[in-house]
Image (cartoon, rainbow, N blue to C red; front, side):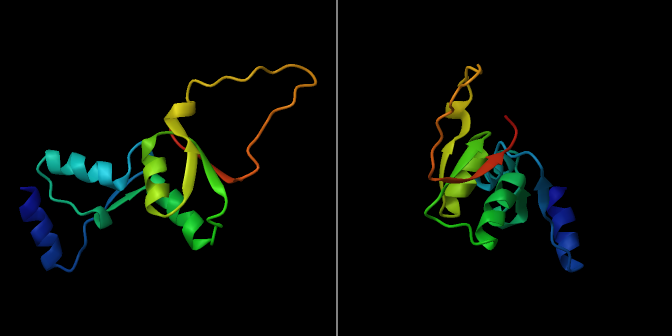
Length: 120
């Protein structure tokens, strides 16, 4: 049924695109999921918020010398890597805690130039 509907749309000059604001998965991960459900989709037919974040940095000429700190899941990390950026954080930092007290200095990585926050 899906393939017939897609063919009908294609015959009418329409393109099918899957859009999600769920940043936990990359386009590659969604592609695998769709294929496991029997839905033939290409990565270029999937638009996720993790991909949008990576493309935002790319089209705005974010310097490759700076790192991107991610508060979120693997989807963002994978899209940033595919776009050529160095990312850190992500699920590995999910359990980190800070101790807030008066006159507390917080160490930070000066090579980080952007922070992306997704579903955490």
